[in-house]
Length: 360
Image (cartoon, rainbow, N blue to C red):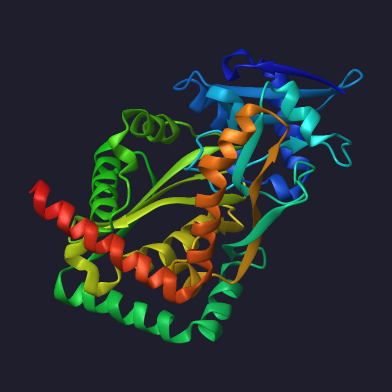
């Protein structure tokens, strides 16, 4: 197998068409984070993005987008932001993962949301559920399932929606809006959420803000940025920005106005989003790996993603192991234990309150 390495800007129309052909050939790759449009958009903002193109004789059989960092450390494109990572490749491809990362000029390739059916999977890795809203049997069937598995949540959310209308005013839902003011409002809520919960504010990095803005401007049959907003009496109260293929919507940045928290606007928005998305042909909403209460209430299925690394003997791989692997194992232990996870979450929120009071 021959491997060529290019920057995304150097991909030609034929490369994009072949990438998309491989992606649509397998349901495992039906995720917008694996689409060529996502990699090319990130590549326009970051010089460390590369794409490994795999050739078997005259045929192109795979694409691996990645970031190349110092010491030969490789990461998925937009590492830390994406809920689906990995190669898009032909069925039954035969490759040696260590040889591939060597051909990429890497000492190690780490991942935390590697999708299924990947020949990249090393012997040692961990697997994690990624909850989904599965509407392949239709939206009505999904609603019936939720009524059975999360009936109290569904009834309570419907009641709170009616109460919001009685208390404040008429509600409206905009699906796939391109209003830049609505996007700014959503990102503002998300920044407040990050600070409130003690997390790092992703939107403090200008390139991520520009990435979202650029993705919102993309709207094709195969790929688009999707902004949804929920309003009451003309005022935005909840929203979500994600990405879609023709049939899968990837959840990404949900947020709401905390002034309306008692009405559970996030749940109202997600249920409305599922209905509107289904009307436009979306069959699956991938909510992404993570222990979140709203995901447990809304899901009716799940995918599986892997976390781990591929390494070859080198100084860079050794440094990476010392800096990253013990931390990842400790984090995994905390997330796997409900009591530890709750304690850590409370500590982060306490830090967020202190940080917010100091900054104000």
